Image: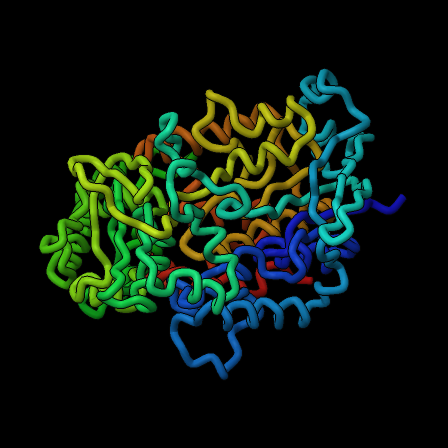
Length: 518
């Protein structure tokens, strides 16, 4: 009997998953709600660029075309790169565009049977049980629905899209009393570039948020409107942002993204010796962070504009909330086309927004909320089963409990991609997709459900030492994580040519090329 594999989403992780599943011999079907591939990158603002250097943001076996000269390609170049990748590996024929998955339902095994399994899916294999996933798909043009069946589902629905997070407002103080337009950055980014430019032209725009998307939106609007119609930013928490990944001409990767850097932090499942080394070398970790803070304070006008974060650089590093500044951001702040306000809360009035400590409203025509997404809720809502919804995120878990950041111990025949964050989400997702492909092909043996749950708990408790509200950021132990995947796949996890390089050279996509011999 043919085992059908369904992939939900044709964004970055969906494309990679399809590529490796195809190479394993399956014929996957990819359901994509949009009319084109690329996921979130199809809906980014005009000025968006990748934060990493392009050599760190590339597929392991498909480098950027030589015609791309920029170190940080823009969103149009990224989309072209994704399209070229999809064409090169025969992914496009597998995609059903304009096909929105409404929900998925697992049929054939009772909840009681699933809970009684000692091994995942009954026997520790991807197709061990008699269950089948029923996938309800809506045609986004005709609005008709169909139910498709698959023995294995790979969820690639994205964590930072689809379900925007809006602040809650007291009765009578929300957007309903505002005479202008309130929207989320997701909706602004989805606009055609010309439409977006016309929308904000000569308008008083206020951006609420302090993350990367807030800075990008504010900079783009300031570039369009200048000092005559300055863009106001309201920030609750100031974060550390870099000009680029170099300090004093020295790549940040040598401080954080090599094996030596990972010796300075505690890692999930480490032995006593490594634990002792991490404790003894912790002053170096503290010193690296302070060095970066000193550099940023000396190179950027943080103090002048009240933008020195109250927390350490490491705090943002461990939470994946640091980033790279948009081009000319501080030039816009200096000239007055971006005005920065701080407030722990905002409320609406007829004219605009009221913030802490100010009686006069910030008069606005448009308010853009760059306040993140409800990734957990989005993931939960795709399951029809209330039992599976409760397994995705419960009050006991600080993040979605996934073994190897891929499989939920209690949900059979399903993998979740793109949830854990690393420095570069291309090759971290590529490692996970190769792992899933090897698993589907019968080349990876899982431990018992109890051992999987124990491993999940170890990861959670270890990383909570650095981020007590851990939300799946694994940037500080990404090499350690990849080592585990390599060992599962029976591949050599030591990817460098010499012992010195192994310890001190940064890891990147090129190191994992040719990982699995076909």
